[in-house]
Length: 265
Length: 265
Image (cartoon, rainbow over all chains, first blue to last red; front, side, top):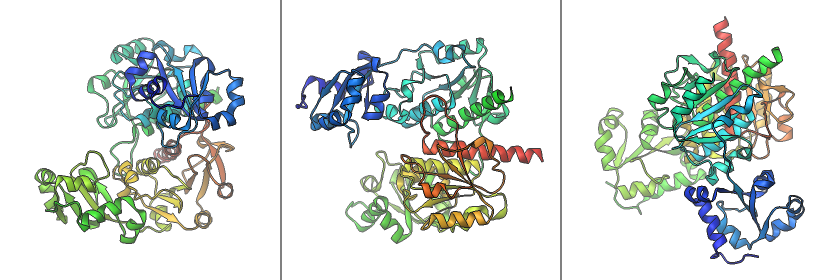
């Protein structure tokens, strides 16, 4: 059992938690708590640190999955943890390596992608990942300047969807958008100057929604790449919606249309 | 100019910021930054504290509105502020006093209400208030155990919609729901056991959506009061959506139906 907070493993976990550079160098990320631990694909789990009380309660589940477990004292777990009330387990998971191609879903259904440009808020990104899985999105493409998806706050808000939703960062976002358009993906940019409401487009075919930065929206040259600027109607004096909310409204309109199409067939 | 952080006004603002009891006793709440300050209805503004640099930049706007301004030093503003980077202005605003009746919108259009039970996350509540204004919701009813809407984190996430969206806390949520049903409001509860998808109901008439606590959902006896349990379809392995996201999907489905109805007439 690890009882000292000054050992190299403890320092290693803290570095992984705090620094994107460290996460990328080791190709790992940190998840916390029983839900995130037991939803992790066992083959991706590099290491699990648990408290004694966690081991007592979840020992069976841990052995069943044959996970590489190490027991640590409560103070060590606290030091490793990102949260004020640690949930007894911290787990190192191998990062994912999807290509932009993977985000199109492999042909089982029409691609439905989110393209995020310079999204900064961890809670927003995590919520988008979670909602995207619910709405049947096939993948999430991000510009390099988006917040790191392996940031612990993002991970927590995904509620496990990070394990199942394909995503990747594009060094050249415009190049991928052009490539997707060539493949027949219709790219709709959420934009205050949108000519059409989001309910007025057909997103049953291969589709992607472009969402910009929380404060500034999309860059102009990115918006210009879209096939169509769309907007979500807003009553009252609301100037914009939260980025995760806007994404949810768009993704669920796409799912609504797709379900109506399927049941109509 | 106030330069000491130990004076009674500074302590008063900090108490208002931190304690719901203090806010309710004085019937005030605290907002920060130029956007929230200048969107506040001038007749509701009790007091404005600004830094010298803010006064230099926004002096004209402040005089035009004849606001009761007091200049404070940067350190005083910092002490009063809830944020790490204060935006130069802190403002005390008079609380609103809506009745449950007010939330029904006064007959100009069919009521569209949100009913929130035991919602705990400030960001969720603020985002719901903001999205609700955008979707044309007429009012938000909350159980007494919801987070305080005047909590600074809620206020910030409303992005000003708190000034325009009618809301109230019900001492007896069930009584108000029964009352509304008598008046012809259809009450739809978002529920994992919902029989119908949210897209399968007609919410063009007087409607209300019931949303439960983030972790536990609705209390059973509250869900039983609903005319119908509805659910949002979820693909993948998603067990639930974030409360603000679920609310947004429901409210925007109602707006979609209502806009289609209007344009069809």
